[in-house]
Length: 489
Image (cartoon, rainbow, N blue to C red):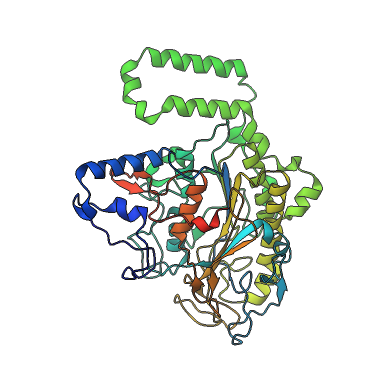
């Protein structure tokens, strides 16, 4: 395969665009660029070495908390407000100063405005949609780094499939297994969802169910702010009639059976049954995970700081999980993409819904998480990411995705939006990229969702071009993008 070099979303004819390491490695002809077969094999060996963690950026992240803002929050009405613009573009909310000179938010984020100096703000997230104007396809891209072939005109996808590309969290726990007897990957408090498509982009896909997240979805509707009080982790509890000695006897019995059945053992060795059994035994007997879920052990003041609502308490639980050794926590915004109340999908009623519902909950929960991690010394090794699948249209009342929009609403907008990162070697007090006068497109340093995922992998010391094999045993890169080196301290 021959691939013309170039960066995502940029004109490959531009002579000033550099040839990336990935472009060189993708050249499939042995005579291209004067490469002999021996040189190509040497390059392949170097790539393998990088995948094994050699010659690579040192890993800063031990864990990641992804606050996924399902629904697509309006960047103009939160953290990239504009002045001197037409009335149908200007936010209805007033601007406020942040602790970073010259950087403004809207009045909806007063608490985040005080912690922005601990974070990096990317104001140039951008991609050109290709069947990605609706939530499901865009969510799949953000979570896996890939698009899917089966996209309807509305952007809806088929349900989750074992053939799907893996969620980035599944790739991380496979390549960087947890060292403690702890759940490696937890998703809460609800699945990714648009309409009737539930969980797309949220599974391990072709990696297999062994790398699926542990899903913690408490009972209760999306408007139930107290659902985190009903966390049920009974599957992590040891039954009262099963004592430690009895568990150990069962393990020895399993060892005896395996020793006497070498043929069966060889037949199932690729499934790593013993490894998974040992992990489950350690997890249940240690009680570490069960204790981490006990948020009632936190002080009243701490719980109040995060906010007594589903998102706030989910962020608090995320902190407890990474503190206990969980590698990946994905906090999914508690309302589905196309719901009304508390959703970021503000086609109508933006003024009241953002001011009275979504923004205060988000502002309190995320700011508390960043402050709490920092004060506990955990932010240096915990990567925090807050991002949605896209932003909202600069002009109110226009249709960009086929949806109806009132004058007090904004439609989907993937061409320019904002993300926030913090911790694990990411710069503090830095704004990356810049949007144009109306926040319609990046003026400088555009960042594709794939590049954001590549940056996440790099934070764990994982080369983005590391090869995984799909259900057909075909080689696939973790993500076809380069990390954004300017984001690292």
